[in-house]
Length: 387
Ligand SMILES: Cc1cc2nc3c(=O)[nH]c(=O)nc-3n(C[C@H](O)[C@H](O)[C@H](O)COP(=O)(O)OP(=O)(O)OC[C@H]3O[C@@H](n4cnc5c(N)ncnc54)[C@H](O)[C@@H]3O)c2cc1C
Image (tube, rainbow, N blue to C red):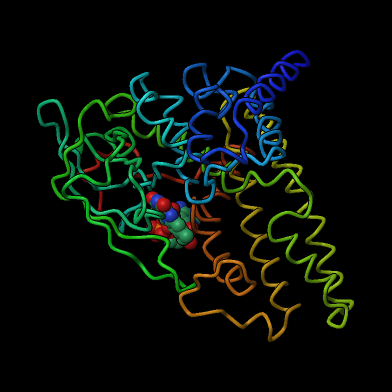
């Protein structure tokens, strides 16, 4: 590891001496960083990486941040970076990796996730969107919902039913869908915050080439599970630095407003601060486990805790700010950096990426080994299910 760190530092220094962040176009800088294998250092050589241990990614990111290197829009491309990329890495062909990784990493192409449907959210395996073989491709029809970032996404990860005659988990196939193709219709949904971050997506006779299938026909559930485990790490994996995220906002508010302090608020702040610290350290351990394999069901626990904490912390922040916390810049909430926004947006944390009820089921069954929920429909052909 020591030699690998030294080698990495040497490569970053050499790259920075050829590409001065202050004098480079940000996009050209990011493309060059990808081409030098310094994007995802744990990815294979030729695919943005150097084949190094995942643990060294943080070191690469730190060195680039310290040098003032541009970031690659991590927020807007959360689904691309956190979910699509690791799934394509695990199941994609070399052609798919060549086509998709570079513009995904640089943020030139944003990704969204076409999984949930009006009748299939928690029970994702029940989805009804159909993909039917047609020559060297597929024709897709159906409706998706709650699709974050579909309004700006160029590509989507999509799960569709390719065989209605087998039980629901077996007849699914995973595709990479071009959001600019004819037949893809994106309609915004207004949220509690006032913004429209997610959408309904209607798919009408959308043609997807077979070369954009990810994994084998009928293996969509296994591929989707890899995405969902990565999603929970992305959503609940937490930050490395102490007092980042909502806990940092609350701590700063506490320090800035001595006149609003009470013993009761002090107790709550301390309790939540300690829990946030435990979650941060656990998140770091989860990411370290990723370095030696794929994320396991423990990621569900991290996501569960981070959703609850974020809701409690953002509530405490509003209480500390009293009436000041209720002042929003405008009803559409286009300013994302205030306590009111954080409080309202946190409501979705216990729904997005799997609800807290479902994650508790995952933890009890797959981590604690408790008896499984009865599943009467798991052997029935999908077309015979009551919907
Ligand atoms: C902000 C936000 C962003 C999202 N972004 C995306 C996205 O980009 N792409 C995407 O595909 N989806 C996205 N979603 C959808 C999200 O994944 C689903 O909303 C979620 O999986 C729940 O599904 P549902 O809404 O159909 O609720 P349902 O499955 O109908 O559940 C309703 C309630 O019943 C409970 N419940 C259901 N089954 C059980 C059970 N077996 N045991 C105990 N309780 C149960 C649930 O926990 C929940 O409380 C997003 C959601 C939100 C809020």
